[in-house]
Image 1 (cartoon, rainbow over the protein chains, first blue to last red):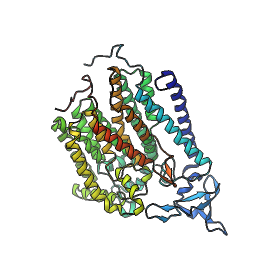
Image 2: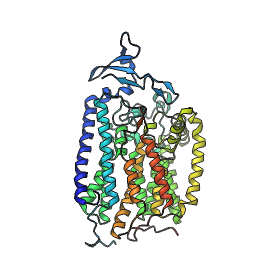
Image 3: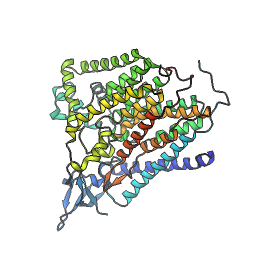
Image 4: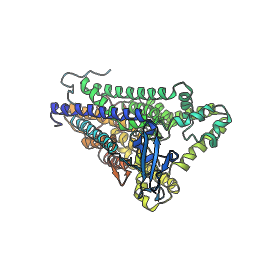
Length: 96
Length: 420
């Protein structure tokens, strides 16, 4: 396909358009949610916005600006590579 | 005066190796995006040390945190690390940050400048391709695609790191050397090395060709720019030098041994860290012996092997070392590989015109495609290893560059000539 000029452009140009469209999608997503994107839950560093769910030792409910209430769960097996200790701040899973 | 290409010498097709680069770049970039989008739709959390694309606290994080510090410019508070933190860059960058942070809409102007620099370098690349006889449309397509699909550039925009200015200066320096303008080259490499230290390594191009004047000019440029910057920081040059020394030392103290950012740290030391992480060594204690060992190894490599190699091999090898030997090297520094990449594209066109070949060219292009795309899917047990894949690709590329000599440039472009 690389040797045929026509096939090369037939693959390359739609591929480029796809990449640009996906990049635009990511950008629009960021512009909508900004720094508080609920997808960035693994990096929630300000747990002061969160409250423990009554009766659960692992679940949290966090108020995310521009998104609303989202529920997260500590990732029990996650280890901070700095010291191999559980690090709940860096590893929080969002419960869909 | 250069002779224009005749119709027979014109290259209408993009060379095979460059086509491989483009197709692979498109495929790997699309795969990275699709992976990210699917993970998001499924509500999966991002892996540890994930830079791609928008993470809280990461956006513009190499620019905006200095806002308060530079508001205190001209007061003792500026020099106080306890109030506004450290400024872990060489002295000349104080004035660059002071300029950008002192204007209104600083973030907008910073990004616009970054994009203007990137667009200018892409245009210069396109022009270099056209100069080699490649028709305008393929030149635009290749240079434009390489720029649009550049993960280091996206990461640079995300962080708003000052790296783009180092990239600009070192790209001009390396390209001027490549095309024979050694005096301009020395001045720009010196300027780049005064902004961040590692472009200093490119002064290694001058010695094998006995361009001692250029080497000294480069050193003079570094010293002059640094001294003038320290003088303007004040209150005295000596006091500013002490303060700047403290700031730079803080980098070794707080960053060199860190493992928080391994997901986008493609340095060789990062690879060592990942390989030994399970034993939890004190990497801060390792940083100094590592740096000394790497410096000795690089000097040995330079005199025993690189010295005798053709210019394209030297440029490629030094470019790789410039972005890998520091104890920490985040992915935006990969921008400094683009001059070597452009040089290989030029060699590919020259080889195509002469119906000859550049050894390992396709392999280099495959490795560049892996290095210049996001690799967001290289994740094992919630930890991202994209940067370590890049480090391995860079080692392979370095070995190839040191092992197999490439052809020198054609006489019409090679004003510096081969090694004596």
